[in-house]
Image (cartoon, rainbow, N blue to C red; front, top):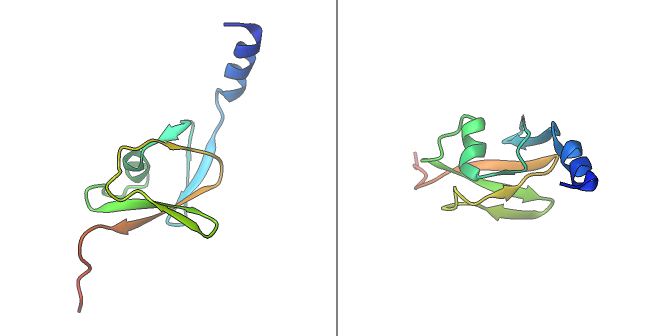
Length: 89
């Protein structure tokens, strides 16, 4: 490692990334998380739900992609949705 890479490595250590799932705040020190890991942190059952990443007006669905790594950044927003048919009353 050079002094430059040591400096970059040290700057990233301990960095906390804040994000929300369904409006609830969460934090991580991981640079990448899977939808499954995010749902487990949010106490959402990944077997019955999926995540959607909200970027302004754009929405990126992770339905069926629970193990894809998502690059985390501060203030990233997710919403969850239940998989399967919605019961009609």
